[in-house]
Image (tube, rainbow, N blue to C red; front, top):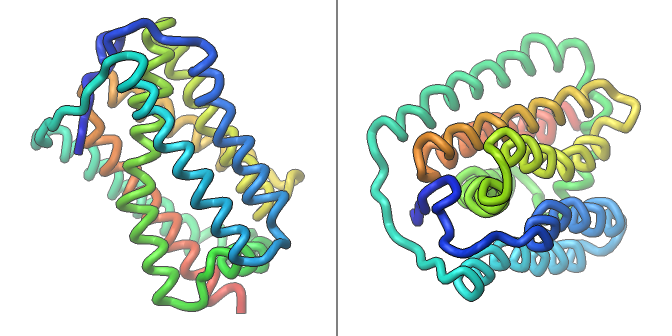
Length: 247
């Protein structure tokens, strides 16, 4: 994994507010398009727009940093402390999330309503059964989580960190990280559900914690591992909703 140094020295040239603004806004605008506006459109169109949009999102920081700031990737092997910092809290939170779902949220019927929305969205992404669901889960947990940390912590937080204090950079980037998740959660739970805002707040807190970890460690290993485990918890719950609750 390319793990650039954190903080103001992570990219050599001056940051740009317009670039930061684009990085903050793009995921939310893109989510409105592919997740909301195209929800009833054919499966092939949803998948095509999603693929193109993700390529734009995740290639932009790398292309811009290399062409405008002279940054070049470098390899940094994981340190045992970084691995433990990512894995141990991640496993703890995975266990808490799954336990809370099975012992409280599911028995209380709080996920009964979102089941149909989960099934519709899964169908839109070509998920037809356990095999395709697991394949999607592996991609998100191992691949997409790394890309999100690169996008939100290395680039967005890193650029903001060059322009402001840690508190401002972490706060603003975490709100941006939360924003598109609010839309996703609202589709599943509704705008009037406290779960939409409770889970959104949890996403923002997670963003703050990952920004702090990145600031302290100077690489993305701990962030990626903990993010992957949090995503794994979401897919464990999603598997139960899709293949059990939604029936």
